[in-house]
Each structure stands twice: as structure tokens, then as C-alpha cells.
Length: 167
Image (cartoon, rainbow, N blue to C red; front, side):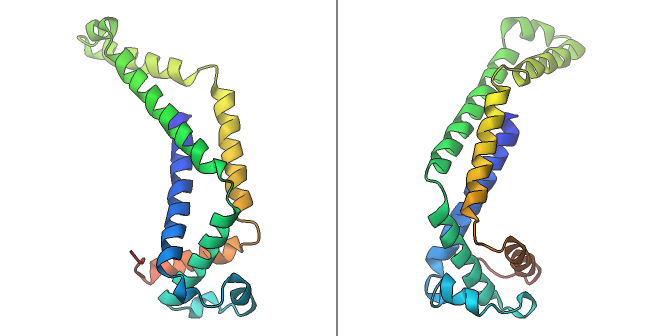
């Protein structure tokens, strides 16, 4: 559960950070801004790499402005918690009882699997699920007013054309 939560949080953070980086490096290319761009949207299949980059930057700026500031703090806390739990699992696996069991290969695998199952069945699973849902709700709210189908189409074309992301 923690690995899935960490993956979702990491994806969201990377997406937001990437959108911010693109926005900062191509702010001049965005033209008059999202309000003006919304009036004259070019068909996606006719857009150049620069046009797609500018539109994604504009959408990234809008998303960043709408993203709940608590999102980053909670994502970092969730990541730290997942790393701590992973460290605990590793320490438990190397406990004296497990080291002795690990002298017999089958027993080692069984002990490690049991430790993992116990860790996954913790009482805070519902809390973790609620936190993940809260993060997804925050991320979804940050996309209000953004045409997600268009953003996906632009992203697909951007990749297909092997456009370069500004550094």
C-alpha cells in the first residue's frame, strides 16, 4: 500500500514539477496567457513542438496555481513514512530469528514473506487509503478548467514527434 501511495505521490510531484519547469522556461512562449490561448486553440494534430510546449506550460501554470499547498507537504510525509516502513521491514528481516531461518533457503523466503504480509496488514491501512484519496482529490481539483483530453492528446503528439523538453 505504501509503495503504491508513494508511487502516486511521486508521479503527481513529478508531473507538477515538470509542468512548473516547462512553465518557467517557456513563459515567454505562452503568449498572452491561458485566457487568450483558450480562445484560439489550434487543432492538436497541427501543432508544432513549440506550440505544444507553450500550451502545456500554460496548463502547468494554471494547475500549479490551483494546487492545494498541502499537497506537497503531505506527499513528502507519505514518502518519508513509506521509506521508514521499508527500513523497518529490512531490519526485521535481518533480526536474529530470521537470520537463523535464512540459513535454510526455503525458510528465509517464508520468513521474509511473512514479515511482508504482517507489514501490509497494519491497522493504519484505512488511514493510508484515505490519505491517498485526499491527495487524488487535491490533484483532480488542481485540474479544474483544464481540458484533460486535450492535454493527453498534446502529450501523446509531443512524445510521438520526439519533441525536446526545455531544460
